[in-house]
Image 1 (cartoon, rainbow, N blue to C red):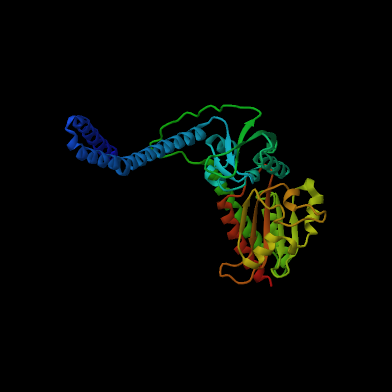
Image 2 (image 1 turned 90 degrees about the horizontal axis):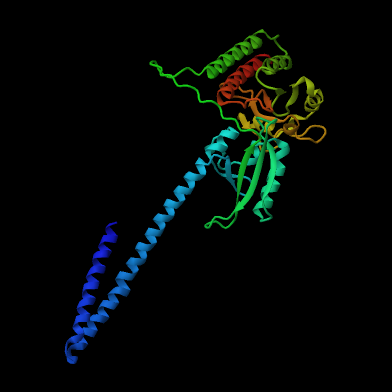
Length: 376
């Protein structure tokens, strides 16, 4: 505000000088030339000094007001009680408010920059992308029912409308989400604990389950018969199946991997047989893990062909309704050649693989690699 005060002082001085010039009109005509020169000097001062400074102050005030308005609109967007998502024509999330994060179970910071369609079941993704593109082209508002991959039985009504931000060349799409029922959960009572926060029993249970899984895997590897690498890998896969993953796919070898074991849901025997007949060389994730030796953890996989297609030319990830996967190369702690690849699927509404679980599988993969090398 210092520049504004300085401009006000200069303007007040100018007005006083204008008053003096008005009073000078009564002097004799012979002295009017000097008064005219002074008036022209003051006009030049206005045109060259005061007016540009006024425009600068006006622009600065407008920018400040615009920033305040933008901050207000952002706060309103975040605090809306309805789940709202702002995305582009490719469903890439630009903004997601708190209510939408609570509904989808995905943090706004994680969702930003990622396709919004990836949060939903495979059958709904193409429809959402198509309707979003139509709305962005100006073909009118649309509405459709979607199903979150983690909660496939709960339908969510998504209403799409186009917005045209003033500073952007292309329209964006605003999505309003509505569930069939709206229940307000009771707020739990808070009790003061003098010795720190309450323990997270869920996390403690998961850690105990991981330790038990590691112990079972170690026991299985140590008790496996010597010299039969395929049998050893099958026994390790049976430990992971069911209690830890819905699907376990084990491939032996790196240059020319051989599908050794496929374990899946009992009610999907046809799908299990189709994956068992699949050539591992047609699975991009398996090939990348076998050659590069890097673990892949994917939640809501975007590429349906990441694990190839079955004999019916159907993407395996779509047919198995995979919500998260782990593809782990079997390599020892000191490096060396990859002995094989193990891929784990979790499907439907089951919780996605966490980083802690991925780390546990990485430890087990090193143990499996050591056992496979010893069985050569």
